[in-house]
Amino acid sequence: MSPAEPPPLLALTPGRLGPGDAGGGASGGEASRLVAAVRAAVDAGLRGVLLREPGLADRAFLDLALRLREVLGADGWLGLHDRPHLAAAARAEGVHLGFRSLGVAAARAVAGPEVALGLSTHAGDDPATWAGADYLFHGPVRDTPSKHGLLEPVGPAGLARACAATDRPVWGLGGLRPEDARAVRTAGARGMAVLGGLLGDARPAAAAAAYRAAWAEAETGGGAGAGGGER
Image (cartoon, helix red, strand yellow):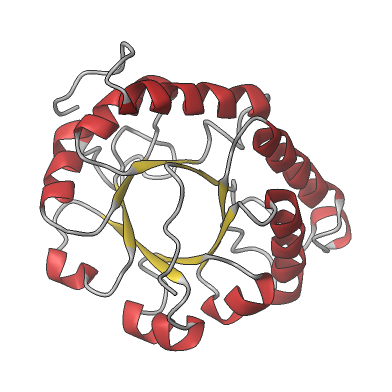
C-alpha cells in the first residue's frame, strides 16, 4: 500500500503544550481545548492534522494523538511531527521531519513503508537531500512569528521554484491566510499547511471553512487570491 499524502488543507497544532499543563497529562485542560478546536475544525470540513507538541513526553503525546485519531475518524489524515516510533501505535498516516529530526532513511526504517514521510525544506536547500520523502513543506512563504529574523519569506515565487525543483508534492507553509490560496496553488503546490491561522484562531470552525472555500476557488481558477511575486 502506498503512503497516503496529506489533504490539501493541513492544520498544524500550536506546539505549546508541556508537562505542566493541567497536571501534565494529555487529558488535561489545555490538551482538551486543543482537541475541542480540532473537533470544531473537523466538523467544518478539515481532514488533516499534524500533531507537533515537542513539550509532551511520549506517553502524553501518544494519548493526545489517539484522541485526535478518534476525532478525525477513518477518513481523516493524522501526522506526527518527529516520533516515527509512535506512528503505528497512533494509527498515523504520516510522520513529518524537521531539521532536528532523524534523517529520512532512518525514519523510514522505524516508521515502515506505509507511513508518509514529510520533510520541511527551505530556500538554499539542495533538492537532492529531499530524496526519500513522500511530500514536502516549503517556506516560510510569508513572514511568520516562528521564523521572524531566522528565515526570510520566500514569497510565491520562491515556493514556485521549490515546486519546480522536485517531483514530490509540496505544501506551502508560513503565515498563509485564505487569501493566499490562489498564489500557493498557482505556484504548483499541492496544498497549504497552516498553524496560527487555523487551530490558533479563536474560531477554528470558521477558519477551517474559510481556508477550504479559498482552496476550492483556487483549484477551479476563481477567487481574488493574492498575487504572485516575492515579498
